[in-house]
Amino acid sequence: MWILAGLTAAAVFVLRKLRQGPSQRPVGGGAPVLLLAAFGVALAQTIVLAALTVFARELDVAATGATWLLTAFMLASAVATPVAGRLGDLFGHRRVIVTGLALLLAGSVVAAVSTQLGSYGGTVAGRVLQGLSGGVFPCAFGLARQSVPAEWLGGVVAALSAMFGVGGALGMVVAGPLVDVAGPAALFWLVATPALLALAGMARVPSPSASAPPAGRVDLAGAALLAGALVALLLAISQGRAWGWSSPGIIALFVTAVALTAAFGFVERRVAAPLIDLRLLIGPRLLTVNIATLVVGVGMFAAVTLLPLFVQTPTALGYGFGYSPAQTGLLMAPMAVCMLLAAPLAARVSSALGARAAFRAGAVLAAITVGGLGLLHEHIAEVLLWCALLGLAYGLAFASLGGLVVGAVAQEQTGVVTGINTILRTVGGALGSVLAAVIVASSATAPGRPPEESGYTTAFVVAGAIALCAAAVTATRGAVTARPASTAVDAELGEGR
Image (cartoon, rainbow, N blue to C red):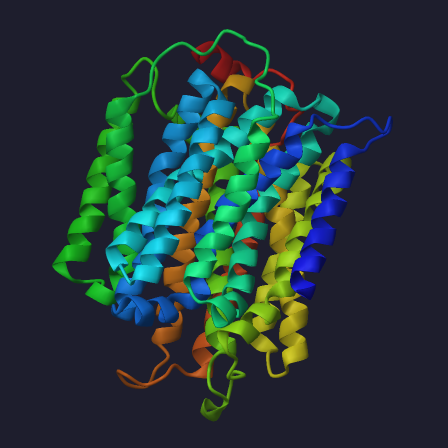
């Protein structure tokens, strides 16, 4: 209960900061609802992570089968995000957010009931429905940009960006204790709660004043090719260890991903209204921030994947703490709290020094923290301190990413560009989780033997080095410098529309 109380107090603090300013006038009433919606989607992503072994037992499947509860969400989210962003730009972000929240609620109910009935297929289907709500993120940025006063937009964007990390961290924190008390189905009922509250709150969020929507239609061919490429890539990443990295199936999936990506690029260059304008992905204003997003996602998810595994290692092996899932959740609580508290801090740093400086500060702090965790982890007090600092680091990094992205493009491109950025976070997370597992597993002295402590040390240090690379990317010449969200896009993109 003290975790929930602390998180509630922190959330109230953030919302009060967002609603106040020099004139003490409130921000548009929709900002708290958008934050709640984004939080619910982020919570759903990682809610099963700490309880996969419990799901395997309850649903009578192997451990590799249980991982599909995580993979299914990531696949569906990666596919839905760019499509939802484009739909929001064309037909209104509020409408797409409502649809996404309805899918999140429906998926949560399906997954909860299926888990109670012991239906593995039904639970996976529910996770797919939950994953389709991933489009809430880009549309939340788009709606905020249309409805929030310019002087408060930076704080709201920072808070929305932070929700990606906060919700994900909280999902890992509460899963263990909740499963111990109420069973695995309770995790999905927990996700249904913010989904229902945000859906009800959207009824009170007015639609922005009507304006001429961007010309064009949804690029269905591009959507199909992008979906196929992402499914092949994430499937290969998530199943590489289980099937074998050199197995024909994994090689075929990687080849398919490359071929579909090439076909996607070919199509997008030739359609009148592409699903993703490739200039927004690799153009000079966004290339560095997109690379930094992918890299920092790898570093973060590598670290948060390693932490539960390390602290749950039996002490008989000479390292680890033998923690239960519930104890692991309590250990990671400081990370979630500090991620939430980092949102207003990121907004202030961005206002004073720029969003790029805030991101670099977060990435550098993450490198120090994760590297330190790999070298100093003998006492639980050390791990608690590193967890708190890691939450602050990635809270700064993720919160500032929103400002970098939104400030680099025109208003009508907000949905699709933030969708691209969200996809890169998802792909980076999958890569980071796999990288961490591969490094740790490679330290085992023989097949079937537990990993050595040196495997965790190496994996943490590598994750820290990756985070440092993210800071270096934004320090390169020509890195994007965010400008006020209300300004026009740069001449290159403006001439291309």
